[in-house]
Length: 295
View: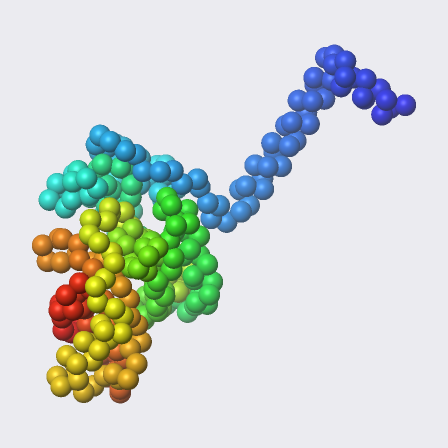
């Protein structure tokens, strides 16, 4: 009887039906709000960087506030045209003013409004902290952060995973890059994230979104590049395990004149423990010339 009456009220709504409907909507909204607030680090929607024009200082500050999720963040800084962002519009350099002036700082592309670099030193754990985040969990958190903050993340592949020990404990670093479909070259579209193993938080972020301006198909093959590296290194330095390189990567990098170049990056490990654990050689992907003999 009560069910039939309720259906009748819904089909032929009167004041009571509207009141009941409003009450139910209110309960639903309250439950969703509570659920959202209980989710840690809930990702925000990522939008495509703006096209055309130039972002003003206030727009750059707003971008940083959205990036950090801190709408009240107080920042100062200005446009530096010497360091070029997308389409040569320059970069805004911004830093926090409190609680410690300059503790966190950011670079914002003036053409797109995208935060391209962030250093969040307040997210590093104190030296006396002993907790350590497992590496697998660090990668999950880093990927979630990168996916949230870098538009087009699904087009990238992970190319670097590493851990080092710093003054604030272990630092886990990750890099994702867009890969050329034909050659497998790493293109200049990437995002890198570093996370503190003690605090469990991302404290450094770097993105790159540059158009490809060169041919990403090498004239020098992988095996040929390794042979060139071996031939160059063997008579000069015997500290390295030349039988098998630990890494061989085809990458689009920038030379000293800020011009793109296609290179083979060949890395070898040290035969014994010492101040250097590895060495990297860069070989021109088109000519086979050694570009960098020791790094």
